[in-house]
Image 1 (cartoon, one colour):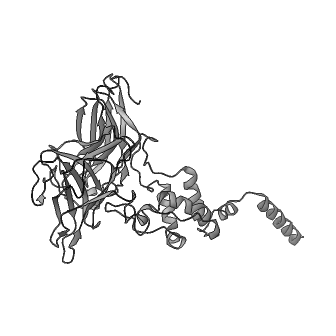
Image 2 (tube, helix red, strand yellow):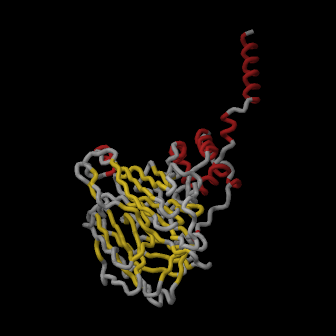
Image 3 (cartoon, one colour):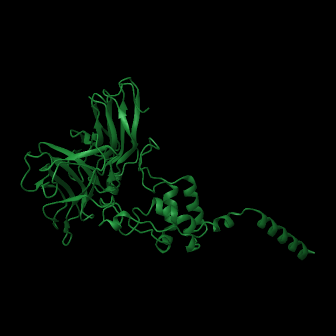
Length: 437
């Protein structure tokens, strides 16, 4: 009798299990080739590959190009995407306005978690999408395509064994053989050379006829008369093209600066060669707007020793209507947050960019999908917050027991709110009350 009851019970349980949409059955349907690889291609492989697209010094430490490479990291991937640490995106607001905004949907995160919970099965290789064709694989390493011309430093530079931290600027003239006539460019891409020693690279365009030092200059060498900042790139940065109708004019006889910040641990055998280059892409449509890259900066601060949350601010009132293309908050090891706010002439304000989890290791440039109008009379505030506590110092490797001011070294600090924009002339000026709220 007991045996009969047991058999009946097992039969009933089996029928229930077969009828119920059990999680194990659902998880088994999620496979790497069918479900996970497309997510990896779209969101992860940009950096997680042997020749990562990230040109500026931070390439992911592991590759996720195939199942064999990805499977050992499955549980770590699930943790990182559930916590939204990956893909890296540090702005909390506004959402949906930046073209390079990264992030997975809730459904994509759930798919990855289900796959890991099911044991990370490979599935059928026939379900895999075609491999991504990376632009730099076909364009001599340039991610934006084949450049129209490339400008190099006069010669490679050796960052010697005993160097810990150095800022040095080199100059190259745009001679007629490089640039036969004045030319509008719509994009540029920096190649920094040895990624292991480069903290950042900036470049400026110096007008023809302006004084240019004949040799490399340390520290503030880029601050010469008649220069206009072209761009900067640091860890986590990416190159991009300007929108149609926007560009930068390069004149024959101008000079290009290579403002390099190198940082490494000094040791025997640590020397590295650096041979930076800049690829330029000529505008193929008429250019209406000359792009300006500038900074809202504060260079007169001192962060107190052991202060856990010190704020530094800077402001500017616009004397013309502008269209904003990009923001790039830049600071060093102590920086924890950054924020841009617009205060309009009508008394209203708007949060332009909030980065509550600033990370020097990912120097993201935030690029609008559509240019943002800020009318004349708008005040732009840029604030940074810094943690000079012993707890952060132990993680980031700096001395918390000193006053810290603006300086070029990695263990100094900066408060630079970069902004890329164009000025509108009187015929294009907009009513002061008009903005993108």
